[in-house]
Amino acid sequence: MTTNGSNFRGLWEVACGTEEPLIEADDIYSNDIYAILMTFGVEMARAAIVREMSRVFGVYNIDVDIRHLELIADYMVSVEMISLNLAAICGVRRSRVATTRSTARELT
Image 1 (spheres, rainbow, N blue to C red):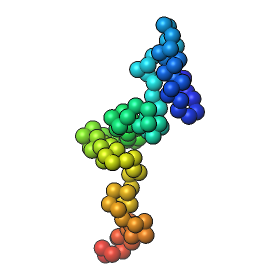
Image 2 (image 1 turned 45 degrees about the horizontal axis):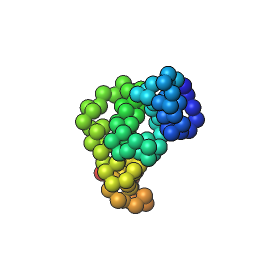
Image 3 (image 1 turned 180 degrees about the horizontal axis):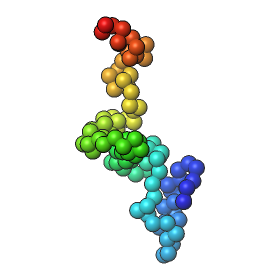
Image 4 (image 1 turned 90 degrees about the horizontal axis):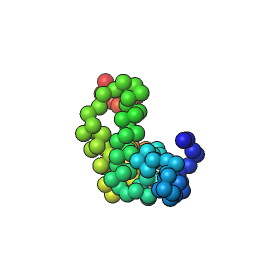
């Protein structure tokens, strides 16, 4: 089943609310990391981040060690949900982020 948006509470009612569930509770998944964080907690959000990153790299047949993806996911959920960019990780202002063109110019 594909839906727009994430209504985990509604899905749980459908999956677990009757004796004959319409949906298996173990098969409920969303790519909305924030909704997963708010509903299931930080460990599930971390696992979802790893799963989504693996899918992105998998499309391009890039093999990345799962430990590297777990390290990135750990950092992303360590204090609060952050985006994965130089400004968020290093605290660098956007105006100070070097582009590949300006970096190449400085090195030559």
